[in-house]
Amino acid sequence: MASEPISLRGVILSSREFKDKDRIISFLSSTAGVIDICVKCSGKQSSKFQAATIPFVVCDVVISMTGTFYYLKEFSVVYSNSSILNDLEAMTVASHIGKLLSTSYIDNTNSKDFYELCVYSYYALSESHNSLLIYSAFNWRFLYLLGYCIVYDTCSNCGNELGSAYLSYSSGEAYCEPCFSKIRSYEDRFLMTWAGIKALDHFIEAGVNKLFSINVDEDTLHKLVLFTTRYLNAMIDGEFNSLLDLMKDLNL
Ligand SMILES: [Zn+2]
Image (cartoon, rainbow, N blue to C red):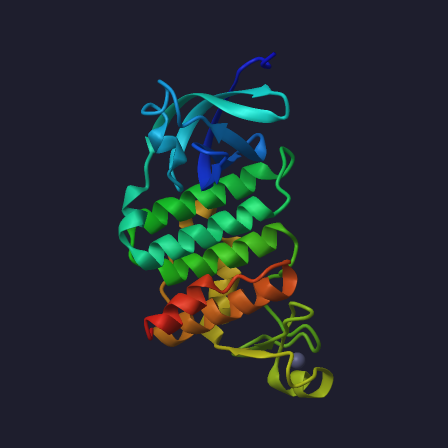
């Protein structure tokens, strides 16, 4: 017996094969968190549901539960974000975002903020060419929503205002140079520029619609990509090096 149908607006994070012909999509909505939905790809509904197996699409769905699975009953595209699929770097960042969100514990109590962050990030990736900035901003805001990072206005030890600063992977705090050399080990540090410190604070404090409205120089941008990736790897189970690997392969 199928349950009562449920209507949701959400975004497709990823899609994988299931049994012979069907697919499972990982679906994030603002009210239900991340759920898996089975999409029947055989039979007469198959053509109607083809777009429902493409990642990064914002869509309205109707689903119902049979046994332990949600099944897709109705589907319509709200915004396809299709230009992400034409750009290797944007696609890598979008997949990274999908992987992080689908493997984190997001349920109906905390999903609204993650959903908005995801939708704005995918839209920005489809419209702009600043994938590295979107990547860094997403990572930092995501970690902030999980409670792993803080605003860096002053040195965590002496309280003096920060210029460039040493960021700690283990504590998530920022230290001025004299303090860092006194209290932290050499390995546990990342020297971030002042512009990078300001950018990280912006990624926490800005409205989600203004998250990517910031200019940073190229050197700082690369530092932001590197630091936020390493910090993710330190804080979250798993390895999240897909963008770094791509940049290495392309010699960026
Ligand atoms: Zn200090």
